[in-house]
Every structure is written in structure tokens, then in C-alpha cells.
Length: 368
Image (cartoon, rainbow, N blue to C red):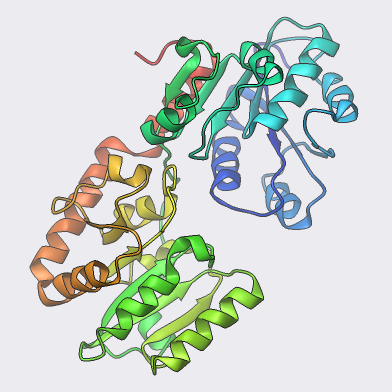
């Protein structure tokens, strides 16, 4: 190990690529060429492994099966024999692997950091009480995620809990994408977008139902992302039954996605579940675009209704349709909300601020 460089290890065990995996990717890309020696361990899932391999950092496959997976802990411990190490986990089952590996390595200079990406109550069994003592810092991506975790009164040192909101890495420049030409959308038609994983919890049925109420408006909705075939087929069928095939378009997966977002008039993210901290909302903000979002998740901690966004209750088709009309009929307001969103992202949610706080956690320093 190179002198004066700490070893930073990320454990990634999810079966598909999502916001948590992008969180890991961005941290490793940002710190991999600086003061840390970065390595990654992930399950043999092709989609995830292939994406992480583009970082050109040491990448290893492990089963990462959780509490009873001693094999993964033994393999990981070989990388912890000497020097200062940080193991960054992204769920509690991987934290078990990290704790076992630290014990097996016999290296007291290993810190265990866990980011809680979900909105769920903490577990309270004796096994988790032991694990909570082993984790040095738990990072919550929103105050909502922290509050929900503590609702079950888990036996954990409150001083080890911190909140660091998510952020996104912005490219130096964006390629130009002529979205309207690509999808044959006229210039006089308002272009709304919704992007991310196409799944039931994202509230896409609610959004399509809202579009059904707006047939007299010149609005086109572009859905960007992919999901399970059966679910996407059900959305297409819904669109066809409503007579919206010319108004609701499926773009599939697009990467990079920011050039598409920068071309829309506003974004819509009608999730019906409590999301801990939506990266999608921040992506619209970073492009100076207003977003209509539900008010039930961590996004309500940085989106303010009528100031930098419009917030609606989840599963409320009428309220969602009214918000779409409000932005469609009041272009100056839509533009003003988007500009304020950009200011708020730049001043409060930018990636440099996020990375500085993560560094402090790695170093064992307080955030104050």
C-alpha cells in the first residue's frame, strides 16, 4: 500500500443498478485518483460489475450474502491486514461482512461507514445491537431516513448518526440532443419528462391518468428509463386504452440522461412511496428545470412548493393534473421556479459540498 494513502473499499451487493450504485460510482470516481486507494467488491451481477469496471479501479467479485457469509469476510480480510482502511457499506447485511473482516484482519485502523439509502425502521434484535456497536458512522441521505430508522428505538449511539444529502456529479459539458426532432415533437407542444426506473412505486399509472385528464392541452410526456417487461407492457397498454399514444412516449434507457432533461420544459416525479432522497429531482434542478414531485419523501427537504418546485400528495391524480396545467399555462412561473431550483442546487446540494462531508466521515471527524 502506498505511503500516506488510506485504502477505501466499497461493498456493493444489489442485483441491479440504481441510485445507490450511482452514489458509489460517483464517490469512487471522485476520490480514486486523489488521497485514497480505492477498491470495490460486488456480487457477480453482470449489469453492476460491468458498470463499475468502467472506473478502472481494482474490482473483485464476492458472494456478499450477509450475516452468515463467512467466506466473503475471509476474502475481504486479506485486504485489511495493514494501514488505515475505510469500508463503506450500503446496507446492513454488508456491514456484517465488514465487521467480521475487520475482526479477522486484526487491524484496529479499519473504519466501517454505512450509508442508509432507504426509508425503513431500524432492526432491534441482539444481532443488530452488536452490529450497531461495530459501525463507526451511519450516514443517512435525508432527515426522513434517519427519523424512520429511529422510530423502532434501535440501540445505537446517536453520536454515530449523521445526515448528508445526496448529490450528483455534473459533466463539464453536455452533448447536444435534439429531443423534439428525435421523437417528432412539435415546437409549440409543451414537453414534460419523467425519468428513472419504470416501476409501480414510481407512480407512473397516476401520471398517465393525469395526462388522460389533459387531452385538451398541447402537452407531450416523455418517459425515460427501463423496467421489467411485463410492467412496461402494462403501461403501454394503459396509454393505448386512453388514446394517448401520440402524447405519452417511451424513450427507453438513455445515457447520459442530462442532455434530455435540459431539453424539457419541466420534470414530473410522482413517486407513491417514500424515497429517501431522489437523485432524479436533483438532476432536473441542476439543469434549471422545475419539477413536480410528490411531498412524501426526502425530496420535500430541499424542494419547497411554490419556491423551487410544485409538490403534490402521492396518488392524487387531480392535484397532479392541476400542477401540470399550472406550469403549462404560466410559462414565466415555470421558468422562475426552475431558475430558483438551479440556485438552490448550486448553493446547497452541489457535489463538492457532499464530497467534503463524506471525506470528514472517512476521517472520523465531526460534521460541525
